[in-house]
Image (tube, rainbow, N blue to C red; front, side, top):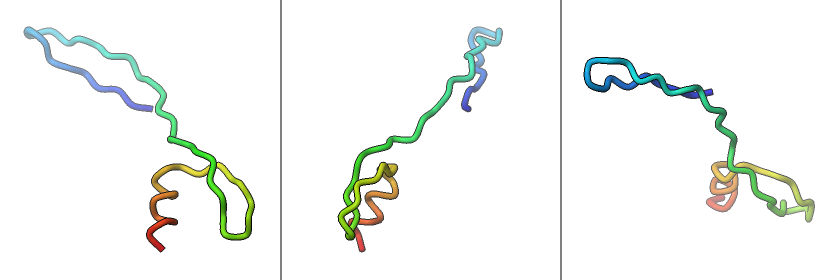
Length: 48
């Protein structure tokens, strides 16, 4: 969950907490299985 308060013209402008989801994509593993992984992990797999 993320959210923050911004100071605007001397008054607080409340911003509501939004839900952040991971960027999931389908990826093939070395053994041939297809799994959903986050892009951060996917980039790490391709570097190896």
